[in-house]
Image (cartoon, rainbow, N blue to C red; front, side, top):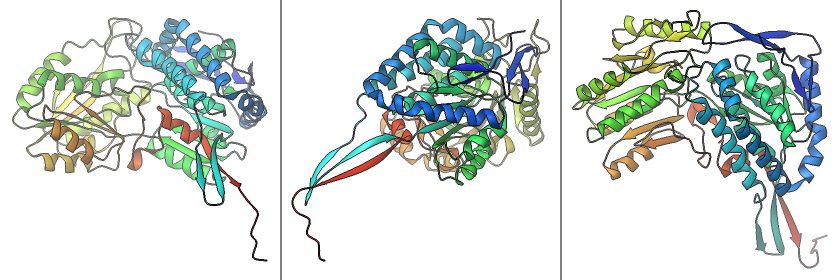
Length: 485
């Protein structure tokens, strides 16, 4: 068991004022990793106060100076790549084969990208009648981030990097299920030269997130999480009219047309359903396959799924890791049973998996349902596990309408060789992200975020800085003031 992990407030690791701790678990084995400090109301106030106190100096550092610090932090993450990757696999149950690239590199790339953007964040100038005006993008102030458990380090970077580049300070609450990498991130930030108070990390439960959402001295709240949590955060933030960004859930469609490259389509469906054992918000779990190729698609799909290895997340040979918690494992299994009860045909998987040497871990077999209909619970609701629903279609107009028949709108994908159809369908799909002939690629340069109940605002890309800044207009008059008095 590791030593107790403490709160990071104003560059120091401190015990919680109420003395509360909670345990964090290794999903791969079910064993306790260690104890983590649980923030209380006084800790939230202290973290926000530290972020507020650090704000003037951080803002005054300027874009070039802030970019230099962010670049140093990116380099520090890369220097600790293996350590951080192992920490993510240990605390989150993700295969160690994924975490160096998907978690650590993604976070470091984000920091590096916004390090480069910081110095070029600028306003505009325009001549108008009576003078001219210019605009100034200015930081919002103290920003709070609430992270999800599936990509804890990446999300900490995705929220901190644009916020800090724009001149804000950050108070970050990681998920109580995966708090370790965010705390290590805070340690590395201090090591890289991030000034005290600029990044504060306070683990805890929902009450900590609610306190941040309602806090009168927090200027912006950004959540990655479920739709229900997003609605609560937005309602709480309304009490102070603070800025809000929400990256929420989805039930994304993946459409495979009859002219698709079948091997690529199968690869895309695998990435869209079983990467990180299905615990990805953008996953394309509604797989619409043209009726003329459905049999061939399923044959190749099942052949490749049979080769996937479910195993200890710390084993580099493992393709599929563990569910984040025992409760979530049973949640996913309950959806599988609901699919069977509704008449969907389970072609593969459908059960809890047992891994030798990890018998107390929380594993679910990669599962594929065929014969699904649009009204089934497994087709309508987000499962957040390795469960694919396959549906047939015959017509483009029909499948687009069915794909859009959901309250969500985070992502979508399609496979076709017809370039005109590809762009036409991409335009018709109601989603914040559409992949053509691929799935789940999210470069830092590309805006990330959904529509409908999948969220508000964008992460990544230069546009993300717009959600961490406010625009001030300054009018400069030329000539005398003509007053009618």
